[in-house]
Length: 193
Image (cartoon, rainbow, N blue to C red; front, top):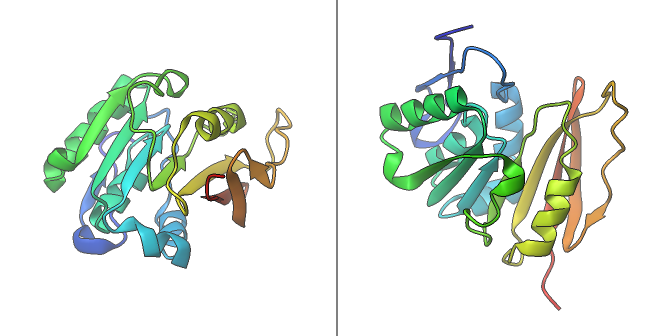
């Protein structure tokens, strides 16, 4: 719905309003955002973290990270209207100096974003299989040991997306939770050998 609002769930900006794009995105609900950020693994690293928000949509996950003390967030979103909403939310919340918004397809972002994030969100449209993107990240990124990748995905996809692997390169799944027709898989970067 155009002009609809959600709210930041936690951190210094808890309760502040967030704008939503008119259509074409599926922002993470307050329940899902709370579940993600209340996990000890994420709670322990988000403060001062370098964050990347892929398929950012309205940017709710990255903004939530900034509210909870993240140092910076790089938002990657191909939809121009969604990028405009992210920028407006950042401006209204006073977060522009902590964020960069990249309008481009996720598959083309690897030369433009930091490849050493502490926390990365992968939240594609449900019809998109993000496994190839995560595999590319695992090959190209220089994740610090203990960095986390959070993948929000559809469980019952009409296209029959395969279940996610336990390991993707140097990323090992440490948690999986279901929410209705969706799931959130959390992966941790292992030490480089």
